[in-house]
Length: 357
Image 1 (cartoon, rainbow, N blue to C red):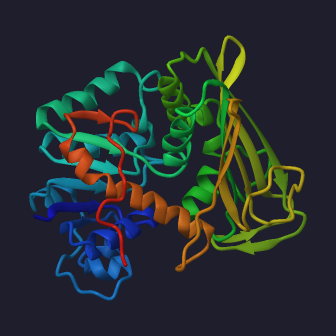
Image 2: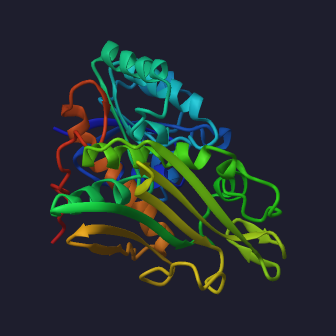
Image 3: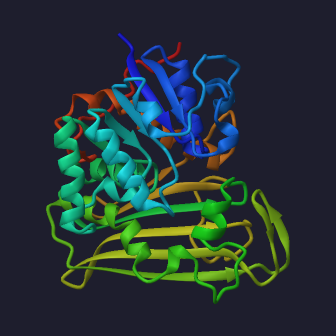
């Protein structure tokens, strides 16, 4: 029997998750929730960009979504600049007895030692009230820097350091809020965006640091962060607008999880808006972008993950992967005990039922 699923949020990830929910016989779509007035009343097929009329029209509030009695809600609403609201949304869904999988709020990927205990306890209490579970994931933070490195570490005899990297050209990334407000592209170099405010890098990718540490059975003593910015040599256009000369056009940042002063776990991002910027920084394994896992130990590993798609470029392919990881986890999350679930305690999601001959 198909699993009854509703979706909230039809942005970059949500739209692609919605496509899978519509096209898969494993799921019965019950509702779509949106936050933009112009989307209310539109058919789910139109919002997903597929050639199908589903008869499910978008609604503008969570109560209307829950009224359709889904077993699970795929929550892909914006969480980067509204973490508190996203947490409250998810708590409401859990209290209604509905499981949650999604891309936000990112902090719930692994909140321990990052969120105050009282906040974690509230989410856990909501889950206990509704006898429901929640699993938040993505690509990065997500499976590229938790599932894959932990699988590789499980083949080692010794691990001295795990480094996880995203190396990508974001010129085609169609997300103005993330690009301009969160990351600060197109801003003066001395105008710090949300991402580079003190502690934000460590908070955002602290989920990765802490989860990898838990998987390795170690305690991280300290999380440090650093970043570099590169200005545009001249004005040029990207998908979300114009990048003026002298404003931020490339960035590199690192987050270090340290054990007794040693960088045991490192998250590194190299993000360009033009391929020729900062050739001295790490280069992707394929044109446009890739993810990389490096393990120093015995044996050593250097593994590149190169997502591609017949429907778009590397950025599109990565978002498809995020949506696939979310939707494919639904049965495991429904079967899981109530509470915050992570990659460490979910069973391996293998892609059962996805083969197309």
